[in-house]
Length: 108
Image 1: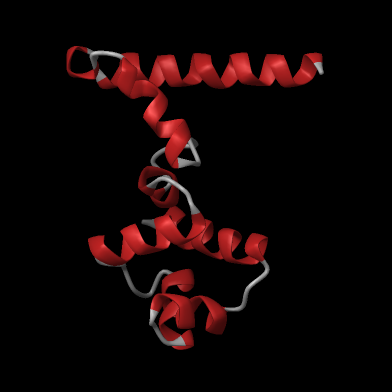
Image 2: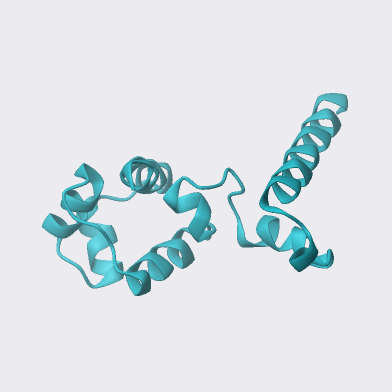
């Protein structure tokens, strides 16, 4: 969960809120938020879901397991019969999608 602490802090700063603000919104203390950001405490699954929902990011993104940031981005892969794909094939497809998006952005 090393990446979690970094992503949590980055998302909070990006949103322009303090640890206290985030704690108030998640019904946690400012101290607890600081502990999560320093990696001194690990979130429960329920809290992880609340944090991901608050920042509108996917849980794998929040944990550092994926660079797919939003829920809508992660849902793209579900139009495939994902149960027949290996993890490697799914990751290759995600990488392809990211590259194609970047190519489209560069054309603009």
